[in-house]
Length: 125
Image 1 (spheres, rainbow, N blue to C red):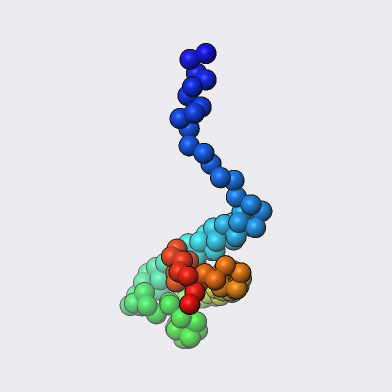
Image 2 (spheres, one colour; image 1 turned 120 degrees about the horizontal axis):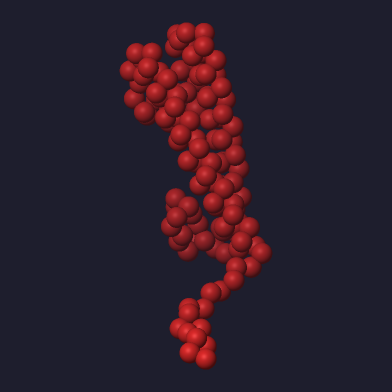
């Protein structure tokens, strides 16, 4: 009998609808892909540093800069690793861009919200 009153102290939880749940999953998937891409970029940076190539982290930021890295000379084994890492980074970029496009279109068209950085929402004007 003493435990019944305890339930009145618990906060109410609003259950997400199907669409809200899907969008939250999509945003979470995007965040995971960004983390994976960062991990691969760090691994690629470490590969170049281990071969004595002084490379600023900014050199991995854009597709054009990463393409220029294909011309750097590395050992044959390191070259395989570089190709694999660059390919994975490109694939993740494509997936992230697709998710961002869907999320941005949905929030801009349906709810009149816009994304700044996928963590801050603003009312569209």
